[in-house]
Length: 218
Image 1 (cartoon, helix red, strand yellow):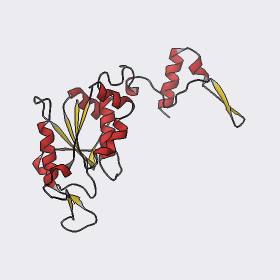
Image 2 (tube, helix red, strand yellow):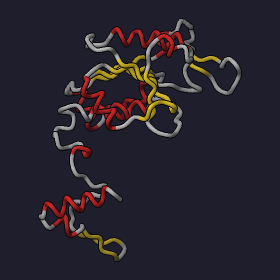
Image 3 (cartoon, one colour):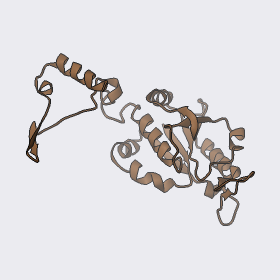
């Protein structure tokens, strides 16, 4: 599965994609991540891609044409022509992204083009050129779309077979508690003892599952 990321700041992804599970998934060719910087598609000699908004208002707006060219370039790199390429426009006003969304996208194994906004946003005419699906990762506003894009890559990638290494690894596929424990069984801090719940040491699988279920509801 290939993620095509349209962003002004591709370096923002390096640390997260270069560590742990996602790094291994990329090295094992379970997923691919490609970047398209609108600055590389502008005809301005200074690589400027933002201008003041029509109608007034604070900040700057990313111009449509460089973004359109970046998306067009990404579409040329799509590996599976049998499936319609989904273009995701990250927006606080978009449809809420969920685990169900991640599973659905992962199951189709199609290329995804994810557009990361910045500043006061991207010229809306891009949405008239391409059919996009507006998605939000939560009821809040961030300075750019790079973090939401990383959240989506992570959530989708972990649904792809082999990325987590074990079919039982995804917490949503099993009974998992928000509270987890490991060795030592007991330790002391500032004179107070902290112990692992006795039920987890009992070996009684039904009781352990019931305990985990009870913790899920808290």
